[in-house]
Length: 344
Image (cartoon, rainbow, N blue to C red):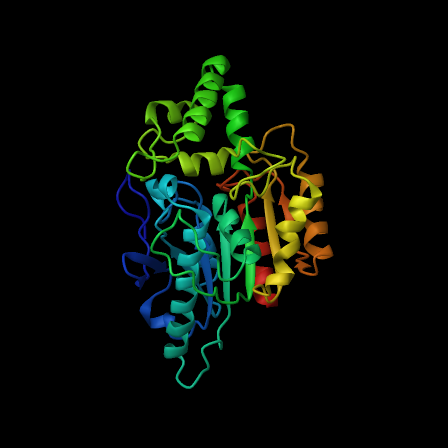
């Protein structure tokens, strides 16, 4: 149903509180929910939240007559929260959602074991970093001073995992600086922010140091979102490619050794129970022109397979698709996701 002019469409579904202050929206009517035993959890990228990625509702519609339901998940890092969170916190919260949905679906199907239904996590953009971090990082995660209050529970297994538009935040930001109206000013802002973040990552009372928003806006980041020195350094990873940060997973200049430590560890962790589906947008505006997409994705596939995990045959560079796949390429994207899900 579409609302009045100037507003977006409305969506029927069920809102679930999967953890305190955290919710997920299930795109299905309560009447059909009981028959949908399998679940696709969608994780957005930086600044994303409910209905901010155009193809999500269309993907949910494509799943309407199947036994799959799509959950759009909100994390602490959703919307403007990305700048003060981390991949560690994201995957802990995704794990909470996976456990919640497994229990929810088991309750809907009396007598069924908790793993009766399948659960797949699909990440868009920086959500893809969440997916890869979920699959390759130690399980449970080691304790960290950066994420106080996290329980660091053992992350549940996944029946499938999808990465869509897995671009490098570091390379995207460097490309924005290079192509800005005043590259010299943008580069000066970049260098000053890196220096400030490295010198003063913490405030005097040991809280995150928040960088000046008027400076971060010059790098294409939202001017109304707080960004900590810690998360900024993780996103721009000034020590790369020699010493990449936690967030620097997809840059084209990373070494084969780095890929062995990320893609190559998927099989070792034993979380992914099937193959990895990777869908790179062929016309992704955040992918710098100097990046050879085909070669880059081939390197990821090689690292994944040499490590012992499976690379799904439906993986592709989607022709004509921009970063969030607004129009062109959307049908092919949804078709490939559907074929993947139906094969599990």
